[in-house]
Image (cartoon, rainbow, N blue to C red; front, side, top):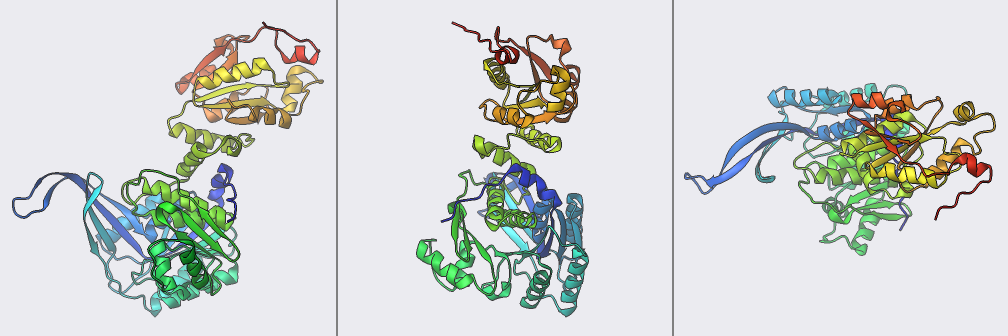
Amino acid sequence: MSALPPITPHQVLGFEAARVIVIGDAMLDRYVDGTVARISPEAPIPVLQVRQDRSVAGGAANAAMNIAALGATTTLIASWGEDESGRELERLLSVAGVAATRITRGAAPTIEKLRVVSAQQQIVRIDREDTEQLDGAGITSVMSALDKALGGDVSSTAIVISDYAKGMLGHALVGEIIAVAKRRGIPVVVDPKSSDISKYRGATIVKPNFTEAVQMAGIQAAAPDVAVLDVIAQRLLRDGIQALAVSLSAAGVEVIEASTRTRIPTRARLVSDVSGAGDSMIAGIAVGVASGLTTLQAVQVGNLAAGIACSRPGTTVVASVDLLNEMLIASSPERRPGTIEDWDELRRLVAVEKAAGKRVVFANGVFDLLHAGHVSLLKEARSLGDVLVVGVNSDTSTARLKGPSRPLQPQSDRMAVLDAVRYVDFVTVFAEDTPRDLILAIQPDVIVKGSDYRPDEVVGGDDAKAWGGRVHIVSLLDGVSTTSLAAGKQVRRG
């Protein structure tokens, strides 16, 4: 078993540079939500008092919506009808920023799934679909749309084949898509429904669930024990397929590559609805590989996205902010991105913390020789909220403020020491004489300074009032300072 490589928030923030093209079976998911308080007098069936009707993109369209929400540039090539459901689907895709190309599939209408729900439980599902196969003209249209979407530069690009076995993706079309991708060095991620693994020959990653994997392997098995997974690996990892990501529900995901097998566990959570979780997983995997992550890293992203989707009712979209929130909550201190020089990245991470309802505290200083006074200030600052951001004067600004003999330590060392303090969540650096621009960038809830300042003297205090923030003054320890330490003076306190 291989150790799991880490995923950092910096990598998730980098998803915006990725581009993903989704080809597959699009559909519209409709929900009628309400409450049931009685049984019908006409038949032994529940009577639903409707509270709301809503529509969301489903199938390949849901995968595209999830990819766009993760920040990647997204194109969907799929079939839907010129009907009311099709127009609603187009509206949803447009709002999400997904560039969509509709492929005509005969007279087939937009595939629609209607779910009637009470108290987050489905009472009935009604499907409308026509699985007429895409003809030769349709295949030509798909390949033409793919060529246009790819353009000349295919760096940071991935293709998703979202196969729901509804008539869009036949063997011939899938083969052509993968052939084009291989010629241009583009990874292909497949969400399969066919029981014939050869349909996806040459794909980079194929993501079946356990039931689908068993069917493709031609075996019968109720549980994913070692022997069963060995057979799946032997029979499915062939024909140029580089990796399998077999979803095992609560047991996690088994990643099978040529020489390794790795189990990625699923974080324990209350499952609300598994609808669309596979689309969230394929989205995470695709954006991950398009961004240059390894297969294991990309599947970790997909697994995390699927877990979040399962914790929500109905078909849902998982965004990059959701991933970042989970990562910041779950990461151990050594895995958190403590030192961040890019203010835009810091701003976005702080925004994630705020979106989760956390209170953000800010402190700043030179922190040349970290001493008990600094630690006391940082400890009290952290007690005022949930997240502490520390701004450090750069070497150049320190020299301007303290004289040419300072700092005693370079900014990289000062930041590293602060990053090791358990009260500190994020450390950044500013080159200006004051941290006002940094404060404006992250908009903390509380600004902390030592008692050598009055509240009205604190930089950024007036700005903080505009967004509901405040200044807090911390009492300093008597006789403790970097200057006294540098001069070799020691202060004893009983």
